[in-house]
Length: 545
Image (cartoon, rainbow, N blue to C red; front, side, top):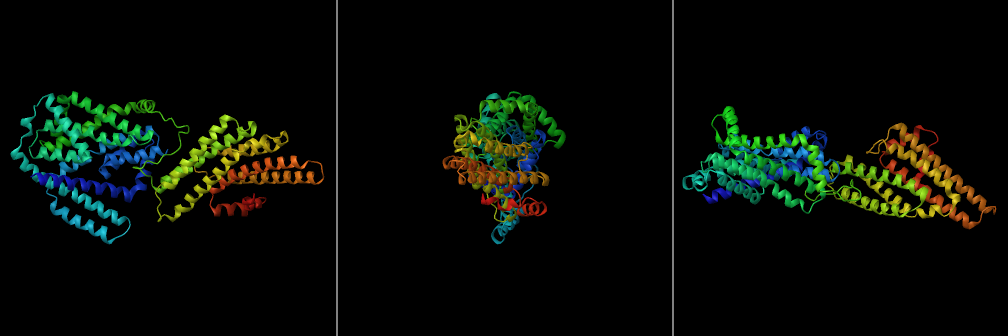
């Protein structure tokens, strides 16, 4: 009996693990895209959370993916709350599968062939088929585990009557609530804990009311693991864990305090839908529990998000800098999107800072901001470099490479701005600074259009290219003018060297900002622009500056 319970639980947990991990592996990019795309509104986030959690059979997996998206800046914290609500509701899918199929029909005859098919796919095929094989094997193991639990619980019901040891009042309910919480913490899975509770109920070991009290505890217990895991995570991870905890604890408290009324309402609904079937009634109870929580929190989502952000403020000097959560890595597509956003934000910040420093020089305030931006660049480049890289997606390699080209140019800009005190060694250089400031303002105007992918239309590309060609020509003419003045003894060599140093810094700043633009245009686009427009031949020699 004990060996059957332990073995059945082990099969169930192992099946859940195989199903969840391999579904994530085979559809990681798709899941991230779905979560990001369908969360513009809270209600769409709820539906998305329900769907993905039902697929993965793990609210924890959905929550970890969400934390990764929020930490990387691809989702706002407010958007993530809808997914968290939906993930809690989606976790009830296990209860419906167990009560509607697993306990009604012996799945052993079907599960064993599925287990074999899954093993053959894993051993003999390659790529995504290997993961699909483990998904099938995991699904089969879940139902095998349910069968073993059902048989073992039937023997247990003949020897133990838990209802006889626990009083039916508030004290007994609270005791079973704590048991349910402890079960989830030990098993590290609320789905497994609910499956065990359902088999206990089906076997007649515990009455319905005590099983319902255990489900409340299991819903609260599922937040404990996430809470502990978030302690070493980012602020975003802590916020997500706190939202998850508050949602379940507040809902659990309300349901527990209104337990007699809530139970009667659930039983009336379940009897009307399914007749007198206790396991299905327990699935209705768990679903109603989470629907009640959503109805309570949904109208106050924005307020709820603000309060959590106030409790756990983000104290970083630059809040948009992405952070890679070790338990929620992003796929290649999302890493590229984060890299593009980082390049956009850093370029816009450095354009604004450059204009300030061209006017005032390197002040203490700007010096500290440069240090912050250098750290932001380091974290952003490390984030993209540490993310997943799919060697099979050759079409994404060029874009990933362009991001690192842009990061390299941003590093050069930071080094040049650290020397900007040399731009103010003589008043005669004001013409260079003014000309460069005008050019940077044109660039900044385009950045102000929120073009986070740094991919301009054909006309805007031509305008920025023409601006660069003009400023390059202007700087070269000034350089020639200075050298002529020295050769004719109209200018001391020391003054000429100072002017040329200032001129060189301005030229380099202009070049690197322009090269960031060009980092995100394909070689075909560059060739097309250079071939169609007269006067842009200088662009092909830009790297010589």
